[in-house]
Length: 144
Image (cartoon, rainbow, N blue to C red; front, side, top):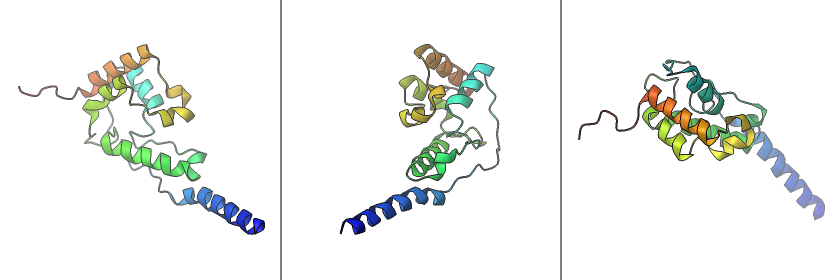
């Protein structure tokens, strides 16, 4: 009975790890490039945001192993759906500065493996201002 349980457990573990091989990964062609307000904003975006909000995603080794493959695929899919600098219609670009200011971006699960994406309060404030200067701010230009 113990051998059977061990075999089932090992099989489930191997299948879970191998399931990541079947997660779709892509970097479609880039249709757009952002007109950055400064090299500093662009550099911080490349460090903290580009993997999920562009078609320049780096797919590291752990993106091929389940369950991390599913988490990364979900983050990239969601990120590109809401805001994608590689598309002519970038989506919610005008909300980027606010999301950074609120501390919602970059997400904590991304920071676990990308410590260089973490920002101090001063860096976060400067980056948010740069994003607003680059993409505008939600509600800008609305008529009252």
